[in-house]
Amino acid sequence: MPKSTFFNLPKGKQSRILDSAKSVFSKNHYRKVTIDSLVEEANIPKGSFYQYFENKDDLFMYLFSEIGVEKKLVLDKVIEKSKDLNFAELITELIAMANDFENKDEVIIGLKDKFLKQCPQEIKNRILNDLIPDTMNMFSRVITHYVDLGHFRKDLDIRKASFILTSVVINIDKFELDNETNYGEVLYDITRLLEKGLSKWRPF
Image 1 (cartoon, rainbow, N blue to C red):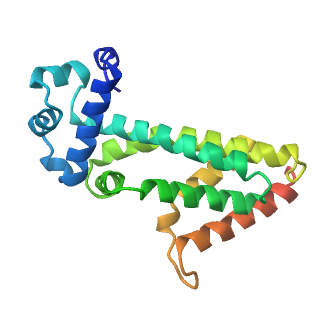
Image 2: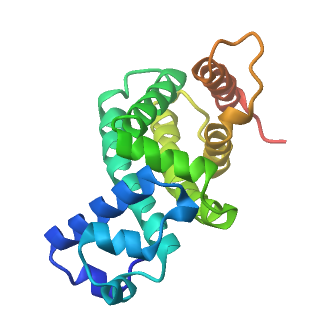
């Protein structure tokens, strides 16, 4: 997380620093990104960088948190516009829009590639740990909507159901494709199974 000094900067300068960092990280191997390359692209003194961030990992993680905020706004609009869909259709639509967002330009594609293939596992885990609660909250809202409609049982554990769905989404690429043509098909089938469970689940 940036230091308070960064948030005291004018919004325009904050955006310039972040945009330049996105460019550097997206175009270069993570290990080869240096503080010198970041400050050169941002046109700021090296000493200023350390007034704003602890290190390049700190900056990289913040970039993902900011991208997450942008993506949340997009997905919130999908939820509001698509509540007439059944549960599986809405979840599939959300994941499709999330994928569209992540592939909308070369910078985000590059950052995602660095996250998946190059950044240290510790940094990846910290980013995921920040992502999971936000994803669970989004799915909790969706599940609550279908509870309120009477489609799902009133006594189901929404938090645990949201955790299951979040775990599936985050790890969907680990599923070995067999007869399925793509992960979207797998996700839809799994969501349909979950939908049946939420509708018919009984306490033990």
